[in-house]
Length: 270
Image 1: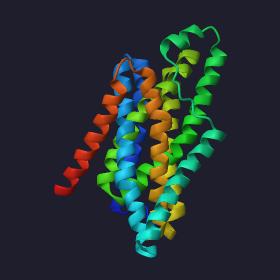
Image 2: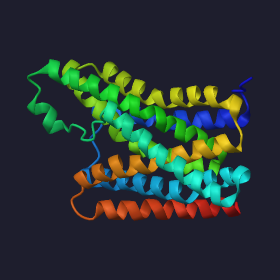
Image 3: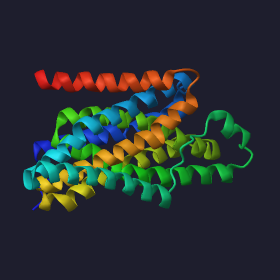
Image 4: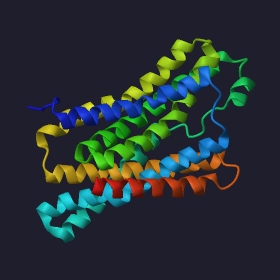
């Protein structure tokens, strides 16, 4: 029987929920505060991308290889870990083909240009909500299982995903609010999208928990690593580059990798 109430499971679920709520922060920025400057947004997105790439390649993929190696030896462990990593990338590509992700969030000026057509804006908001919600399922699964396997891996990954979720909340709330002038509805839309992450985590755990073994962990971690690297390269870094005015993307990328590296070193000693 699947146990949802162990300390490890509840902690992993709580971390996933907290990361998902960053979409609401993004929605609130649209309604109650000024949007972050483009340069800050560029740095933050690149920071999250660098953190995701680093933790995926140095920790998550290695955990996959180690888990497979327990059952198949080092050579096949490396091969199966690499194969599951590439499979994770292919899965996200398939999702992206079926439900294209709106990479370019609408800014205030773009919305105001089309403010005469509220129906079109509302439709844009709903389509953005649907697309981002579909993409949030695997992100929630990744955060949950990474934290379940190791807090030192899951916590930094959750922070990176939370940063990534803020502009997603903006992308959802802005067109909905401009179309309806309803703050509650705009916040609700961003909240619903974010909640796809813990829902994805629960569904994934409910399905996989009865079969948990080193081999299943190897497969899951390999898939997670592939998903996170693709997300960083396909969404975060291109978005960061669009907002950049100078070298913010490179600085954010390097800073994200450096902070993750230092945090993982600290976890080894404390």
